[in-house]
Image 1 (cartoon, rainbow, N blue to C red):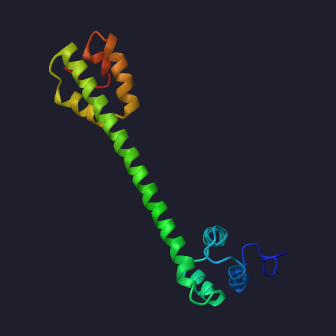
Image 2: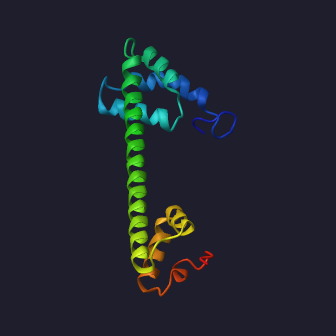
Image 3: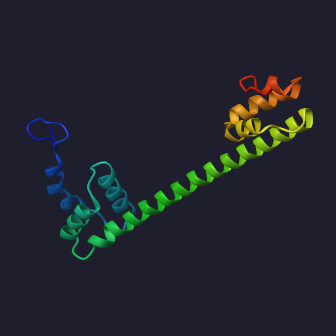
Amino acid sequence: MLGTARGEPGNWLPYRKRVLPDVLAALPDGSDFERQVVVYVMGVWKVRPETLQAAAERAKPGRGKAVVGQIVQELIDKGVALGLEKGMAQGMAQGMAQGMAGTLSQLLEHRFGRLSRSVRSRIAEASPPDLDARFTTALGAKSLAEVFPDLDLD
């Protein structure tokens, strides 16, 4: 079986390292295909950048850093972009939760008067689905106890 040693699946890293310079040598310099193969090798073959750079240097003297550097920078940029995207999503969710908490507090104060510290704390710690459910309950509730049955409001 190609890429196995003594029939042990996954033990073909030495084989990969031997053929890697030949694979890289066959690729057109600076092409999209070269970039795609290098990304594949790093991701699927789990070849570390320094190993890939050494193989690229053997296959294409003087191009080792260029071959790997561009891909590493691209992966770093993707990671940064993903982190920013995730951070923005978390920030938006947090902002929406704060807005929901403020709206619920206003509704409750309007309907039932000044809120106790325990009610304010519960609202501040609530998840968006909990805030939404309590808001819906508060619209028709006759007392604050209906909105927070789990709190001792006496």
